[in-house]
Image 1 (spheres, rainbow, N blue to C red):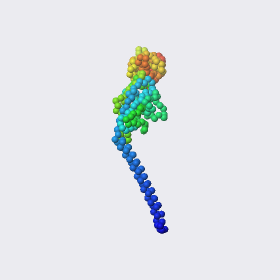
Image 2: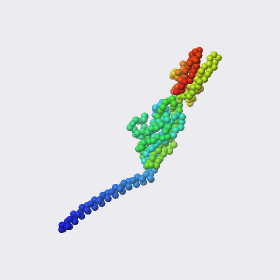
Image 3: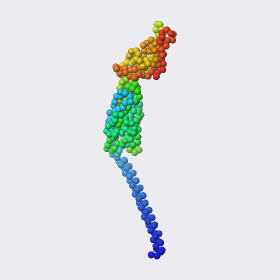
Image 4: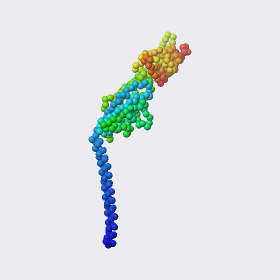
Length: 313
């Protein structure tokens, strides 16, 4: 081989090596691109051809009678998916009927660590979702729980009575809870089970509420009295009412829902703060909102025989 041939061979070999490397890079790039496209297409195909279906059991076990505020009823609720695709849970729709204000009961949901639930609502770091039953729905956080295909999960569902016993006693509420789940942007399933309602009651009598104090005049042969007619709301289940002055029971039981007082009666002889309680046998309600009254004697003849209405709390 002469010198010219050697120089040509040296030039050709690097070019051949570069061409082979470029071909390998292009081949590898084509393979990676195809694999990514294939995985995406396969996932879409499974979702498009699958099914989702949601059913529940255990919600009706939330029926309960509260004997005090800040107490909870906790039950396990099983959610089942008879479809072929796992279903992430997204929300719980809430509908209520009844006299007990729905804002006085809080709904809390979290994932059970087994098939049972604790006797109290756990603190952090347990992931929970809570809302008053007056809300139209309870939103569940992203990634909260997914119901597996042809499987089930157990959630702990709790209701807690809040507020004061006086405003809730003797009342009841019937909520209906509807769990929902979603796959992707618009493929959803809603629980259509027939046992999604329960009734909760609050023991005792609701507290009456003083709604009016009407000033008036009482005429007698010897004297004219200024009077105060106290009016309060009726309490379901109550058979009588009693007035209290500064927290001490005074006078006798009253079967109606109003009382006209003047300073010569045993009820208002010293004025002060008046409240009312409802009674049904040995059961009594909390005290009503307060009413202030004052007694006076404008002519100095009979001390404290005139009564004036004050502020209603």
